[in-house]
Length: 379
Image (cartoon, rainbow, N blue to C red; front, side):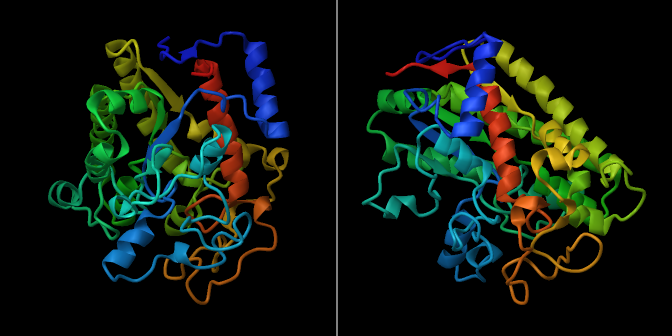
């Protein structure tokens, strides 16, 4: 197992279990003292903390739903450009590492008074893994969102890197002590394809291309000096209220989810994990941690009461149909200015994104996986 210069391998499972309990039960932060000094993240709306809003403001476009209540109602008590009632998984990870919530990277060059050494968030709501011209020309998929791809986010990171460190050696030191969160990415590529009626075989052919995008980005960041990556897999998309609404059919009676869509998520995750293992063999000194979002989230649907959930496939902030989801009435836009009384009892916030309660459980699982791989000493 690869270990960075500031970390050693933690093998004792009892210690891992104790640390996990510490995180969940007390909020005490076993990773904060010297492990990662910065976090840089990429992805889509599941990770975006403000980039889509900044882009919309700069281009005089309609503000996204994340700019309006009830988004943010649970934790921040105001909109904070997140598609959630509170914190995202990336927010909980930052908290556990003793790092401030990641600021949006868009326009960072112009914010001279702000220090970004603790990290930046390059995720953009609506981002795809593959660029929109490829999706349209080769697959027939029309990107209805921003047109931002994973490559665009990576280029933005490389463009901003000279502003974060003063020399090549300083940049390598910065990245060596940083956690790089690679998504989740690819969900929009698949979602657009399913919703636009693309043939399943064509959609399956997208998967190795999406996985290759993630792999190539990791290789590029390794060359720049990064050594620790967190790579999330796909969520069980067959449990998402938006896709359940679009593809109502024979649901799994024990979970309410669509099995064929979840099998697609598992196909993506299987190819991704094989590629990550190749990368580990190719870069033996690099830490690559797979975040198993699929199996963690499926526990919500199999045993909801164990996690405090009463509603698993119905949106908290939504309206219409058995899943409280209507694509033409996004949470935050009139008339959807209200939400359910208790978001923590719901898995889904708005039919696409998760509630803070669900995100917290996901983040705890991610932190547990990180602690199985590395723990840290002060610099």
